[in-house]
Image (cartoon, rainbow, N blue to C red; front, side, top):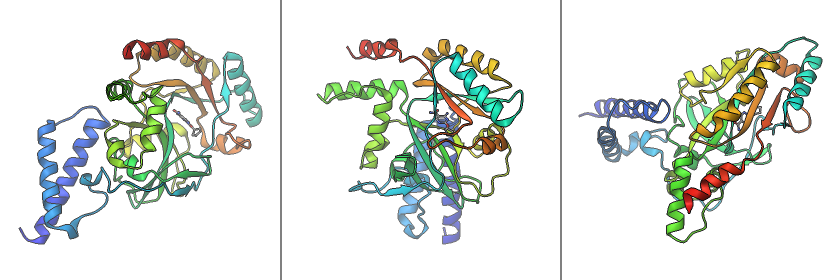
Length: 327
Ligand SMILES: NC(=O)c1cnc(OC2CCCC2)nc1N
């Protein structure tokens, strides 16, 4: 093959592998066997090895990064990653709704309700369609650059079909199954187990060696947009649909509620259904859907006035579950 043909072959293999990866880790609907995936990956690695000048950082062969870091660099968030105010009962939710409607001087406002994933908030930056930087929330203004570790999360696309710069935010988490398996491993090697999946996810993303992070089976749900000059969408729900269209993993359980009564119904539904999930949640996040309303309501010193986190009572049952599994 001449260089032009090799380039085409490499591009073909990358597109195939990105597609298989998306089907398996985002859609949970693989169209090829692991064997076929590995065969194609070996072909790509071989060609990239023979033609190093054709290597690029966004190749699917580059998910598990280079050498361990000495430390994480600091990252300034272009748009602050704020924390959420809390609501602990129906009364708090109705107070929140009243403040929102008074602030907007309207009688009824629709909300987006989302499961509150119990993981680690992270921000992913894409320039020219390439995943160039990933960072922890940190103090909301300054986070840590954990790009190499986030690249190992298979459901994060290394490329998206959008050229304008965009920052997307989400929650990196460890599925309960992976958490139990990891703790069994730690128990066997006499190491201190993690107390819960959230700590396990945080501990994994704080690993300086991406090869360790890569083995922790982390996952992610994206739920917000940070910096996006070209953004023209008018509602949060449209943004969630757009993120999914771009190939991001969004949580399938979100719902638009036309008023606070429907929000309360959704919250009560998930108090029951929470136990059947394959990942931990610690509440429900409720956001005003219209982006112009969000703009109008703005922020307090540390939280948006247009969003609140309904927190479930800390369940003894969940901790008991893990204790049972470990003993
Ligand atoms: N843990 C979660 O699942 C979660 C956290 N935060 C947000 O929204 C932030 C960003 C924009 C307003 C507050 N949404 C979520 N679903």
